[in-house]
Amino acid sequence: MDLSTLRPLRLLALAGLATACAPTYQLGLKPAQSTNLFVEGREQALATADSVEVRLSFICYEANRVVFEAEYRNPTHHALVVDPAAFQYEASRQSAPALTPKAKRPKPLPGAEVTAAVAAASMSLPLPPLPPQAVRAFDPEPEISALHDKAESEAAKAARFDWLGLALGAASLATDVASIGKRETVAQYQSRAAIHDVAVTYNVISAATKIEHAVASDVLRQRAAMLQEYALRKVTLEPGQQVRGYLYFPRYDAADALVVKAPVGSNVVPLEFAQVRRRQ
Image (cartoon, rainbow, N blue to C red; front, side):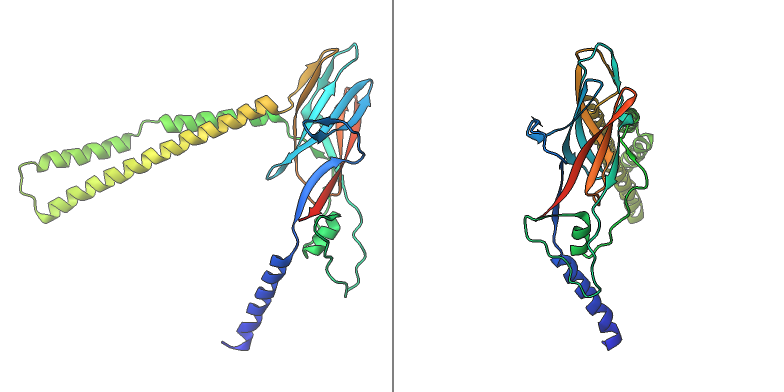
């Protein structure tokens, strides 16, 4: 192997070692200012407008979403419409530290909380730009309808009668019956065996595919049921009523702060969260 081949391999090896040695971080969200208001162990951010109280707590990160729980309390004498699709957040982050060309990569100690810029620098990763505009929450209603439609489609595929499988099985049976009492040549036997194998293989695959469709239908129904039960859905709060439910936003890991803007009638109230990274 010549030197020209070895150089790229060495570079790849060094890149792999750098990635393997890079620190990892646990991401989380908490109210920017402590409120000492807790629900099920989670601290809530609090805002009020026109005597209506809005509380927000961080639930979890999903693969592509961040989940909050919103709580509205309406002590007024008029009704209030709460619409999850009207929520949005604005992302921000602290400025990246000035680094000289010869500066070493940051190496935060385990347990240290760092900014997005420091975390990216410690992993030798580029820092993506902030969202150019406010990020809106997902409206659960179209998703619930789509999940139900997909579940029905998968269920229909699972229940569909397989005429081709029936025809192949009938053809295999017919050749078996026709061979009874007859002396087959090697070619005839091989032909009959091939038809039998094709019929068996096709029907096994068909049965497995139907099971997959049935399982997919159940999973989709469960997702729809979960959203119906837990998601915050558009509702009219009468005087004295309150409501709680999950809000789903696109997640943005490269921010240090999220200001969630919650609608209260014709007003909007901000609820500020700090997004922290703890070195593992």
